[in-house]
Amino acid sequence: MKVAIITGSAGLIGSEAVSFLSDKFDIVAGIDNNLRQYFFGAGGSNEWNKERLQERFSNYRHYSVDIREAGALEKLFAEYNTDIKLILHTAAQPSHDWAANEPFTDFTVNANGTLNLLEMNRLHCPDAVFIFTSTNKVYGDRPNSLPLKELERRWEIDEHHPYFEKGIDEQMSIDQSKHSLFGASKVAADILVQEYGKYFGMKTGVFRGGCLTGPNHSGTKLHGFLSYLMKCAVTGDPYTIFGYKGKQVRDNIHSHDLVNMFWQFYNKPNPGEVYNAGGGRHSNCSMLEAITICEEITGNKINHTYTENNRIGDHIWWISDVSKFKMHYPHWNWEYGLTDILTEIHDALVLRTIH
Image (cartoon, one colour):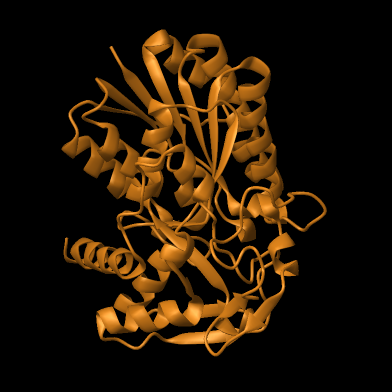
């Protein structure tokens, strides 16, 4: 029997993984206790997504387990033991703004929770592949020291810089920069996952995501950039732009494209490897550019305001260079562009509003 364990299974990436992997494993065991509602309130709840997964996939088993509780994880891993072939760890406290409110909660979820899962992997199913959804926030605000130029609607890197063509690669230092407390807790987890691969020889992989997005995102003010922006476009709720004149640039990767990266790694793991994972030059936008596209799709003007205060540790310009991953896994490529992503998000939001 083949079992996949997915943490954060009712979230954006976790639920996409359930859908993607359900016909590739005998059992998909999802771990999610809806902490997202605690983080972000009722609007952040993913209960609707859990119910959707339970109705749609007969081999999905849901476990409302807190990854900070090693004893609860022990029972789950003991149930399946060496039948576990994949551990896909997407659960997290995902907001750098929220982390400053409760640093203990942020760190124990992101760092301690990851350590618990790695130990379960080592003790119960050491041959399983362990994939970790990390973040570009592990680089802190170091990207803000790059030579950037202000254009009419976006910041852009100097065209003569090595990062201009493909974006920022994995060689950028994660030291001596301001990470936000969220970034710091994810650094701890990121390094732990690498270390278990390099020290114990386990099949671990780290994927440092840009903006992860898709139609099953419960976007909120503090997390889920494109999802929340489109939600405001649909509902008329106000949207606030924080700093950098709204010209800050993000690359955006659809949850399906990211999970397909995970699938490629699962089939040919490179223990302890690190990959930047984002939309790259293929799919990126500034805040102002995203607002324009959302308005075009909905036909509505977004009620947005601007404040000069940028978010601590926020990037002015981030585009992921995914060329290392594409070199290791040449059959992978993006399937979704920016307009495709936003159109899907819009259609899903409208459908959920109707129901």
